[in-house]
Image (cartoon, rainbow, N blue to C red; front, side):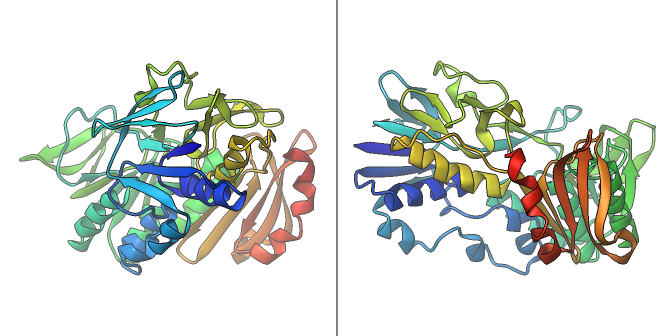
Length: 385
């Protein structure tokens, strides 16, 4: 029996390990589009970008681990086609890999600015290790930096660059950074944190385009008519699932690979991680989560179901971010219309735990520099997964 895992990141590696742990002794192949050994993405916007970590420290596992797993690593090869009837994956190298079961964990791609038709020097995205290497080299020149996007990647890059002493402007179309994920009240606190650390924050404004000279970016033009001068720009305006290679596969594609609750997308095909859009009985008809913890958990769950477990994937959503000296954690969700009730501490003191409720029902728990205290309230979320 041969199992192929397409996608050599957190979901794929977790799945490979789970397959061996669950007793699979057949042929196991892990396909990765990048030439690097599988690595962890969260440090790219923080420890690696700041220069605190070398690239080697971002590795998910030591190189010898894949030998222990008896896993065939095909790195620097991109999957370009899937035939779920013939059970075959086609690679850009021309190779055709037959499989009995396949796990698709190809993740997402950064979304470009629609108002920028041509690439400009000094404009970056951050998704891969190569992206991070290029951005770190640019920041070493100490440019004025503009970050477009107030999500996790944008705010983390802004915090890291500011920690390096750079002149940073953070631009987001929402009223506050991270408001879409943490709610407006917590988002306002994130915005205040950045302003207090010296970031120029522009909210509720969109980018109309970039200014340039001789093929290099010189700033961003906002839709209110103003221009933010910048020799470097990071575009962090979201992502799109990496599913274009599946266009002719017959799989259901809708903002990801549509799966049933067991993560099954078709006979012999499962999906996990950022690319998987799962029919969830609690959180909505289709849920796709982009975060490290979810990727690892789904990788393990998909591996077990590949081997016949047939168990629905149920897990409370969890996200975290480290910015400056603050760790923000959210178990569950905090919808924009949720109410925030502080349970311990005070926001003004830099540490607190809060409950997110909507219609009297707890939807999530938020911790701000309160890891130990937050853990004590997690029992409230047992019923939402």
